[in-house]
Image (cartoon, rainbow, N blue to C red; front, side, top):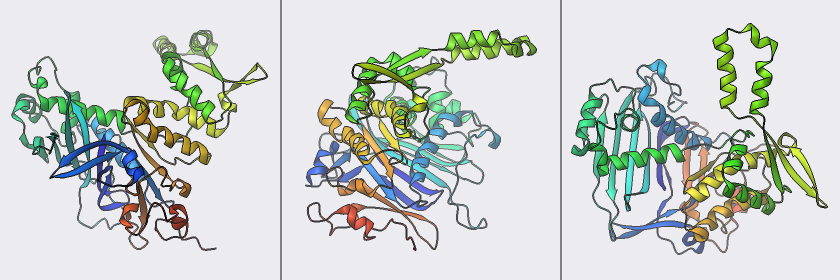
Length: 451
């Protein structure tokens, strides 16, 4: 579970910002309904909530929260292979609106997660700071604290690195660190190196430690959860998942029925063999070198090509309709459907930018309700982070005040600032219409349109 996300000096965010699913206790009914996990710390109850709604004007910086998550994932998955600046395929960018002559401040990204490792719960903290002008890693640390019945144990560092030197590390992974220290790690994340660049047979003993188990589990969390969902219709994954996962097909057909998309089934035709044979017989292929012709044909054979039709049934007659002829909203839902399914049934985070794009409000409510009711239906602990412009989502039936985060851009500095609805202590659940208050400008984070 994601507990907190930390951002500093990244794109439109200049100061330190905390995007939090972690809060103290509240008596509000919807707050209690949306709790995924509870624990005691310093004699007080802490809870992890199931979701976060991010609202704000266009160009306020909302999407940069999602971009921060994507950047962390990219660093983790790719940086073990970075030796020079030219190797970096996605650079980290600092706060954009300042003089180049100003002192360089590292861009810092970090998380706090709650994860189960070997049947025990741990709070895991990770932070990485990068000089965005050189892309060298200035600071990186990973630590953990075991969550006990009545408290949280003191924090233990797995590693701390400053610049190219590893200043502190757990003795249980000493041999692995010694191996890593021999290399140039200026651009390489230590977390990435620990997961992707090791001889697992040689370091078998170190890998059996709790520290290395946490390294692996946290790495899986970043790779499986820190993803973005765009609004561009893509159907390359959808047919494969329908064919290989009957439970997913049952889920998607039920959801399509619930959301009134009028689709009763799908027909899927694998065209890979036909296309490869057609390509082999194409005269243009004869002009290519033999090795290149074989490579093109083999690549096509490895990538399944499908024709998918949505079946619409009227008076017991089935009418197939190509997905390209479906509405934008239908195609978006089909494209995103497996991400939603995985989040709900595999305890992952569903991250959706421009959530309201192409969806009717009732569809938006339906998706959110799947997450809000999920914990009570099957015990899973999925989460969601939804970025939207839709003020109608500001509804106390779905969200506690702590789950609504506003993003506003200061006019003078062009800096994004964040603040939760819970900062407005005078606002109640029963006597205020949050959507109306937002549209009236009483909560901020709204464009000032001059007509």
